[in-house]
Amino acid sequence: MVSSAERPNALLLAGIGLAAGVLSGLFGVGGGIVLVPALVLLAAMSQQRASASSLAAIVPIAAVGAVIFGGADSVDLPAAAILIVGSLIGVQIGARLMARIGDDRLRIGFAVLMIAVAVTMLVS
Amino acid sequence: MTPLEILALLAIGLTAGLLAGLLGIGGGVVMVPAMVLIMGLDQHVAQGTSLLVIIPAAAFGSFTHYRHGRLALRDAAALAVGGVLGAVLGSVTALSLDDQLLRKLFAILILAVAVRLLMTRRSAPEPREPAAT
Image 1 (spheres, each protein chain N blue to C red):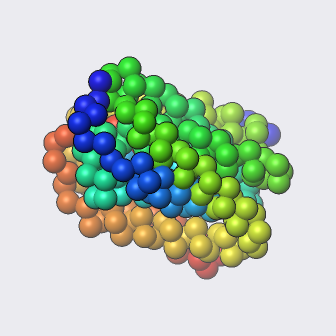
Image 2: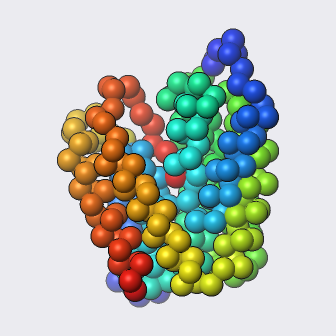
């Protein structure tokens, strides 16, 4: 089990969760972008413990957002079903490949692509 | 849905999952712009759909952590208490915004993510888990 010797302050964790929840609801993302670095830097968690806590917290956070968006008729259920199939296969492949290829070029290539996507969204 | 749209969605999901596994960048940042730019969905619908898609991947991932004894449920519960409240605030705010404005705000978010990715040094060889962001 995870050592409970160092127990991060529950109020601090709730505050970090609040910020991640706002970001998640506002932008339809999980909130891990905020959660993992905040847990490492502010709550002094190891990267691995932060990733685990972050993923588990994302489940109820995304569920609340999905229900509210669904209530506003802003969820495409058939599209979601197909995306889920694709993403679950992709995660498995990605996790296996990760050990084999250096990710620096991939990381930079992806960042450049994201910048292009952002610019397209800004001007469209 | 046409067969082409089904194939496109499968490819988008696969790519989002693959990158989550490889880079630890979660699905939402990839799926939302793809749904908007490739599938032509509204920004709001893309975001709502993304939230639903994130749930099973995050649930599988955290179950794996839990099985290996790496998940402190108490930490996750404290995060979730604040997180659920934040999710209500964020979702209601997003739904009150104009679709075009929300799309532009989202573009700024992914610009920030891209800049952070560019500034990340090659990470130490510690095992990383796919994060459903």
